[in-house]
Length: 79
Image (cartoon, rainbow, N blue to C red):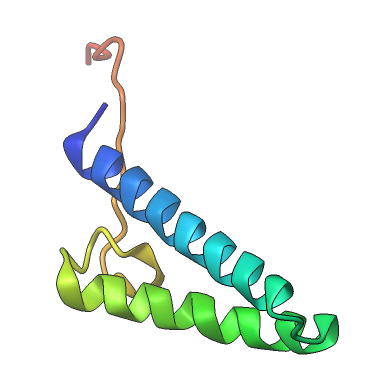
């Protein structure tokens, strides 16, 4: 696996873990469910922005100008 794709997967999983923890804490402290649904998109965008500032911007795919692409080639055609 391309190291850049692996880093992106780790970054995305980390943001998902943080978002899940925030959601859990909001539910535990009794925040209204509808308000949680409204706040979570803002939190995920904030996490993506923070990720692009502290790491490689191409890994934080939400704000990436150049997507990370991995292509596998089995055979090169003759011709």
